Image 1: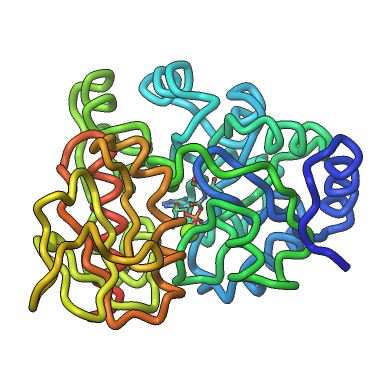
Image 2: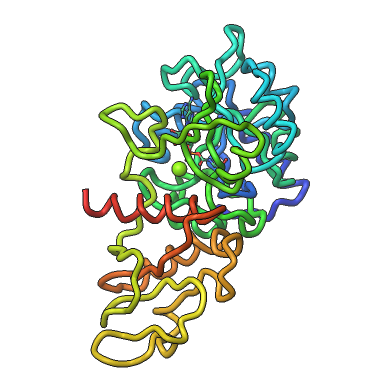
Length: 331
Ligand code: TXA
Ligand code: MG
């Protein structure tokens, strides 16, 4: 049985049926592909963890069509209202207190009194939520600890039959996972940088704290565990040249970059050279990040040299994912 289905109306209807029966569906979102289940069905949500080989303590984002629907599950405060009005539908996840009477499986909260909620912008994700008539719980559709998928093929490679059914909706346009902000305290806390940038959050909220690194044994957001976004090939960050046997993940011009022992990086064969954005555009770079890492990771190289990326705007999210990918390998 083919696992990948184009997201036609008919296939979206079939996918919704599958979800209603407690099955899993990998679905496109604008950030990365998600592995979705009916968020109100305990057994369905439990099967996400099994399919991903994910530690059970890791909570799952629940996807809604609108803020009004999300309000049935969590309690919004002023700042959360503001961010939802500005950035939804879009790549922003808000951590908010669960309502006592929320219909959502407790597994999505993994023992926390909170729930991560988001309204995706991708039309297929929205149509699927509508067809199901329930919110969809969905972590990224990859085996736990490996790279997030931005194409249906990535999902297939990482999860195979475990994905259940893969709805194909093109390449994810953003390319990195949503920005996660914990809105439960007096001051919002950025837990995961993403396409809604630190600068934008600061601009609208004024004060914001940042807690990106795993602190102690129990990070607030388990995604902060360093072992997370990991290719198998070792990464060498902020590379200014390329070693023999290494591939190059470039950013910007490589006109003047050399290969140790002789040669120019620009003459590397295409299978060893990917440029996140030749013109140095951070949005383009984010959209390419996981696909290019996947590609170079499968090339059998000793390492991947990654050029430096500016720590501004979406560069903060890109560098966060790269540092975690690197940290996962040394820890
Ligand atoms: O872009 C995205 O957010 C994608 C798409 C599919 O929506 N989803 C995604 O999910 O990246 P996942 O499970 O791979 O990452 C969700 C992150 C994890 O780091 C998780 O620990 C954190 O959000 N998280 C979820 N619920 C939380 C909660 N109640 N409190 C704190 N962190 C939470
Ligand atoms: Mg993930």
